[in-house]
Image 1 (cartoon, helix red, strand yellow):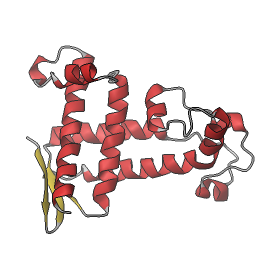
Image 2 (cartoon, helix red, strand yellow):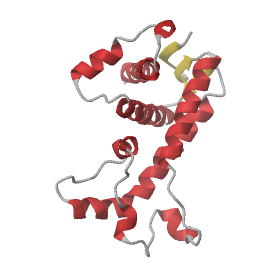
Image 3 (tube, rainbow, N blue to C red):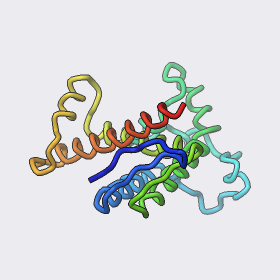
Length: 189
């Protein structure tokens, strides 16, 4: 059974069982797949390193079509599509890469039953968990308080009979894990 994050002199520690670690690693990896930018065959590595492409056309940087990916990478200005497109062109690649880096780091932390986060790694781990929660929330159509109540009503793994019920339980577990980390971080302030 998972043990919530606690603050200590060494950092923020928690423990997860093997099945819980496997689940979390899979979730982190699934979100990485959603965020992986498409690479051009003749892409200039220097421009790629700084997250820009001087030859990219504006239509190349359209908003994602998958609602979950769009939730991770929303428009900067929904009221001004041209400004949103320009912001996306200038920043989306870097945002994707930062998110992917945090998700990869979080996935690697799942190799050990004991998770120990420093003051530097804890915010990145929390951000990775939040990205997982955003994707799950989109897949579960979580938009209102009633939706949240419906999802939080699922609390028994043995009674999950549908994919949505299982996803609701996963969402609740991920939420609990993130909340325990945030509480531990707040206590250490």
